[in-house]
Length: 380
Image (cartoon, rainbow, N blue to C red; front, side):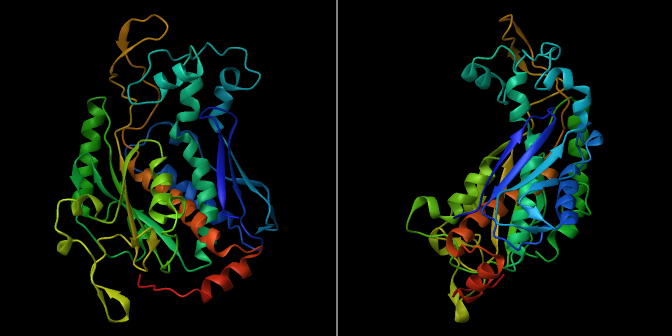
């Protein structure tokens, strides 16, 4: 069966929970790596006060024994340190749930649609689950997915290519991508653009505003033939776009030069094939016909500005029906650098789904053996 996952928990609830199923037995669950991924998610210029409170650590409570997977569902818990200040508001036995009610719903957030859909009078019931805090659990299970893929020689990294309208120079050098990007406060590889991005974030903060941007996620070491053209639900680009598009604040997902290619002739777009099945370009972003083609898989995630503005936006209070300014919950000015880390996890989970669908295996030794004998091209 294909690897799949789910998450649970609220932003100010007791904990977040991530469950990943169908990981074969024998995978070394490296706690240092998993928690290192959670640390990477916390970083980035423009983050809010919540990241000063939380020190996310994943506690594996099922499916792992002596640091190795058992083949059963793996469950990771991440406790919210801020819960002690919210227990009487967000706890299962809370008796003061009106204390931090939110009725001045925020445009761009799940608030209004959520309260109408579920019949709530308090958007707190919506925003606590819709919050990007949920991505901590996704990063934890995504780290397990990365460990699985690493055993097959597949690595995933990311970097920021734009924030607030400031764009970095394009690059095709993916060597030590995360190590290089993580040195930058905005995870940008272009030093000149980095400074302009920081200035854009500072300007937004002064105005009580927010900024969005674009992250590029790169998969290297993946053989050709992962995914399939035969059915829509098996197409690798479709699986990846589903997972990345489901990340909070992502409004568009691009594979390769998809957006630029739409305005060009076919002769300017397609990656010609040469001896040894080599390519001189990778405009397709490593995927053709729903399958990996052996080139690096390149994905871009487009993040809208966060909808919680300290200056507020015009809205309606669902309790009074009056026009007001939207509520100013504690939030980030820019979460794009951390968004790249979350998108890495999403791509890892998507790729795990496709790989495990093809190679199965009760134990990691079986998966590795099957993958190693699979015919395929691998140029990146």
